[in-house]
Length: 211
Image 1 (tube, rainbow, N blue to C red):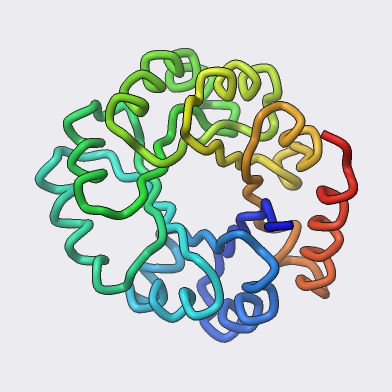
Image 2: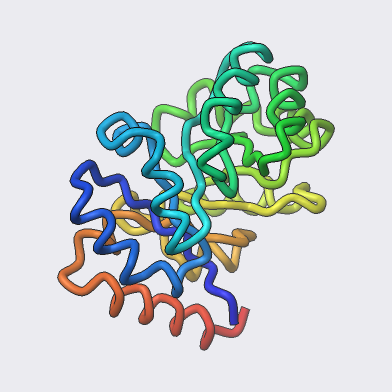
């Protein structure tokens, strides 16, 4: 059974990052990295991590089409498996990203409390833009099951990636029960004394659960 874990390795120490990635890479669906990692270690870390697993660049891009094009050109040689971008910038900007040929995962909601004021209430409109732009997947919170259910019911062919698991209160089992295709787990894995054992346990829990 394919893992449904996206391991969020928000580390800036190269030695620790490579060590954990090499340990867990074959047992997770993908590794996700954010700006702190790329700014500390350079864009080539994307390519280096891709030796161990698919790499999702969580850049949450939110700019005009031309700037999106320039960013995607800069990382193309590192072969990211997917890039995360905000949907609120509209279909023109999302479509430019999709045209790069790299999978785009679009943020239509977030897991932090502050996103409930401006972002999360607009999820329906954001979903429409994501669907019409042809993105591969969407981000929906794994710690807000009501919202997650609503979003996943309209996902069409898009995959749902859910953050907010563990440190932010979400359960990977309940998240999948409510519509997540993949659960994004960070500190629960990389802060553990034995990251591989933690990953294997989560995989087993998911595999043995009757969804």
